[in-house]
Structure formats: structure tokens, C-alpha cells
Length: 365
Image 1 (cartoon, one colour):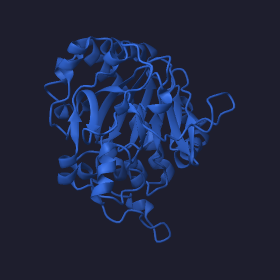
Image 2 (cartoon, rainbow, N blue to C red; image 1 turned 90 degrees about the horizontal axis):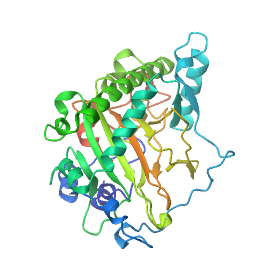
Image 3 (cartoon, rainbow, N blue to C red; image 1 turned 90 degrees about the vertical axis):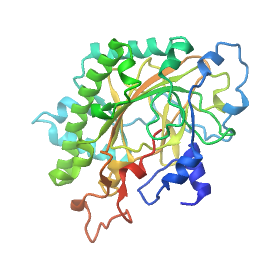
Image 4 (cartoon, rainbow, N blue to C red; image 1 turned 60 degrees about the horizontal axis):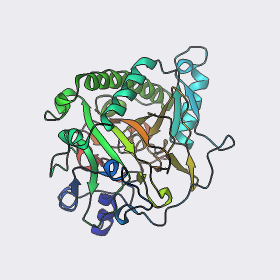
């Protein structure tokens, strides 16, 4: 990968999409990326703004071609109860397989994560982002830590001229516990921390079942999902303030996710996710009590391109704040990302030129 192209990836202006045919030089990556510890957009929007500050302006954005209405095409819906039912398993698994092949996204309903736990996590999230800046800053990202990028703030800023995103975030590694950031996670309010742990444990169980079903459908060997089943789990909490000129700003630019699968939960029923399908940006309307799940780069590679990790972005609006919670199911970091041998045949040769180290390949959003 050329240095100019690496700059674009580091700054977030170019998504790291497709199969792993690119390799990031770690030393170069770290030399170019700087951490922006704390972002004061929430404080900023308390002032009466009529325009977006220049550093937040993202010109030439592709508008959504399709509006968010009842006639818009929507991502497929997968029913977890039907997926586990002997009577409906085959048909629901066929829907899941088709969703991962054609969309790379689906909404999961009837997932059996208790509504009380979900609502409690939403409440804890809202409470955190309503804290004064001086309180949130106690959980700020460590200066110069470009490896873990945990805590409150904004993730990567390539230079002083890098355009900023209209977003604040809180990011933590959840499991395995020995990878948690000890100066941050244990210091969270106990109710927030305990709710987060219970929620992430339930989502890990769902992740295991979804990957088991995928392995069965694709006739993969049992050990070929180990890199994900024994992987790392992280959570990102996102806050998108109202924006005076949403057409000029972006909450999160087009990107694909690094890991296996990602769970997205809308906190306050304000829409903002858009996915790129067939060259068009399509708004996603989240269903009540549903998780929006997408295929990540690692699962695309593991399935030898059978399943798709597609671009998506987060938009902002002028009237309402938006909050969301993303749970990332990433591969174990001492492994290698490569197509499952059972899916590589002479007729379906590997699309990856060589195996990739997970540590080298990882790109945190």
C-alpha cells in the first residue's frame, strides 16, 4: 500500500474494504496517526450555531438516493426463535445465508435478550453522555495510545488538518477480561459497568449461535470458526449531537468493520445508519427490540468472499441527537486471518494472496 493511500485509511477518508489484499505497515501507520483525546462537540452545540465549523465540514458527500419511507428497500429480518426451531430452522437459515451474501446486514428479532437489560443499558448510556465534560474527561483516551484507543473522545486524527466527525464516543474492550484497560473500565460507575458486562455476555451467546449456523450452512469444519469464537469483544457508545447543517457534516464516514460481526442498538430511536448497496446509500430503519447486525471484514475473508462486508456510514440531523451502541465481535489477536480451507477449491480459489496477522490487519473505527 502506498503512503498516500495509507494516509487516507488512517484519516478515515478511505474505507479499508474488500478482502485482505492490502497490508498496513505498522510503523508507518503509528507515525501518521494521532489521537484526539477529547472532542467538545456536545459543549459546542450548546452555543447557538447556524453553520458547521470549518473543521467539521465534509464536502462532496454522496446523498442517500433512496428516502426513508415505507417503500424503501430494507435489510432482511431474521427471527432468532425460528432459527433455533426444528420446524423453521432450514428456511430461516436460508434467509440468513441470503442476507449475508446479498446485503451483509440483517435485523435480528426475537433474540431473547431481556428488554429490561436493554433498556437499562440505554439509560446508562444516556446518563453518561449527559455528564459534564469534566466528568466524562476522567475516562478520556490516553495520549499517544494508538493501539488500544479506549475511553472517551474521538478515535483517529491524522493531522491538524484532518476533518473531524460530528460524534463523541466511548470505547472499551469487554472480553476477555485480561485485555480490559485497567485505568478505565474498573473506574466506570458500577451500574454502567455491570449492565455492560451482562449485555455483552448475552450478545456473545447470540454471536456463537449465529456463527454456528453459518458454519453449518457453509459446511465449514468446526475449528474454522475458532478465530472468532475465541476472539475479542469490544463496545462502542456513540453520541451524535444535532447539527445545524447535516448535509455538510458526517457522524461516521463510509467504512467497513474489521471484525467478524457487529451488533448495533439504537438508543433513542433516531435513525442515522446508511448502508451502500448496488452503489446507492440506503437509510436503515431500525425495528423495535431488534439488533442490526453486519458482516465484518474478518468474516468476509473467512468465508472466502461468500459473505460481504459492505460500506456503511452514520449521518446526523438538525433536530435531534442520536445515540447508538455497537458491540464488536473481533478475532483473537494472536491468530491469522485467512479463508477457511474447506471453502477454497480449484473452482473457488482463495481471494486472499496470503494470510494476514490480526494485529497488523486490525483497524479500529
